[in-house]
Length: 460
Ligand code: SF4
Image 1 (tube, rainbow, N blue to C red):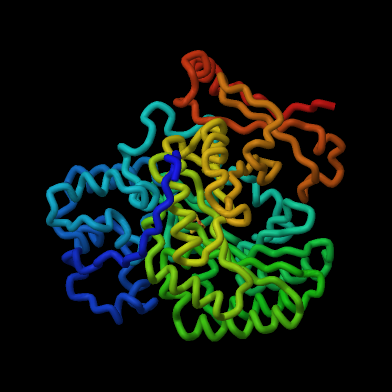
Image 2: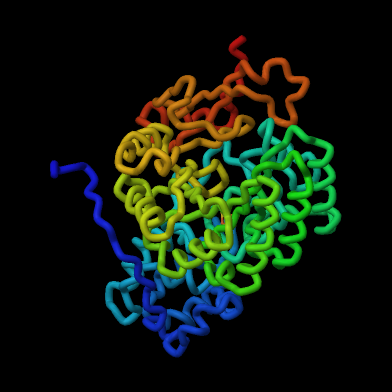
């Protein structure tokens, strides 16, 4: 075989040993595999973290994390044991290299950010926004974003079993942090869900519903089943996708008897009506794919979902190399039968500059992963451009790499542009992180950050 830039090696999955942590030394497999035990033992603060890892984690790390929570964090801490166990999976707290391994770890970098991870110069881009994709502006009813012509996003609830530091819905999802007071949904949950269903009945042009949140794993199963069953009663709905990072973060939920039996019921109904019901999950690093994750994906496929697909997020220090992305894709595909689908560029939310890649870097990654995976499992690297939507990274209309501004066009109107004659001819900007720019670009931003929104420009 010729020497290749990436060398494919099949790697057997292994569940990291949770008993390496002093706080879980006595936890039996039965407890570990219980969703209830996992939820009851999520790490929500540094005191609980210290109780799990014992004295192995240096005081400097804990102080760094504490400073981040006080000054930068947009998401509160919530890490299920399953996820925490995949941080530095082969290093025990008694190892002198433990703290260093935690600092360097990809899962830690996005699930447990520390202050020193962030950019001291530009922690946020000047045009970062809380609801950076303007989803709330496009709500047809509260929580139902109608952005694309034939599909909608239904945010059923604003909570998840785990909170990711880079969450794009940081405006709404999770508990308020020291620096971000979260917006609240105003309608009662059942009224909101009923209003969503009513809108979909009145809008037969929508054929595809992404059922999301938050994470649908936090909705009591009977409520989720009732919602999906109601969707299946709407003849115009042909595709339903359930969005749940918990398939990876809390696979025990999807392995529970109640959920497996319930999923078999709804997939049976979907099949009889010719509707595709799939699960979309969110895995960013190969080490997150463990035997329990593979079992959860297999359980859902056996229950009859059409597919389990992965939508990861490109994050610097987590998965910003072709080998990290390909290792992840092969772990998903070979060992868990999860289809690599998308990698999103990290959105322009506050505090995200240290995670974000430039468009040029994202394009290079897309090129570098081509040809290794089957075509059907080669993920598209996409940029979610504000007021536009997902664009493949090579679809950019023009790109000023010195200022780090890319310009994009679109071929459909979002839900708020019915009367906008220029919607299809404008160019919409997207911004690279300023610290990655050449000196002249950084200099330009130093002087224009306050006033220089290169506004949406008309080209026709
Ligand atoms: S699971 Fe998804 S919605 Fe929940 S915090 Fe993570 S990125 Fe946000």
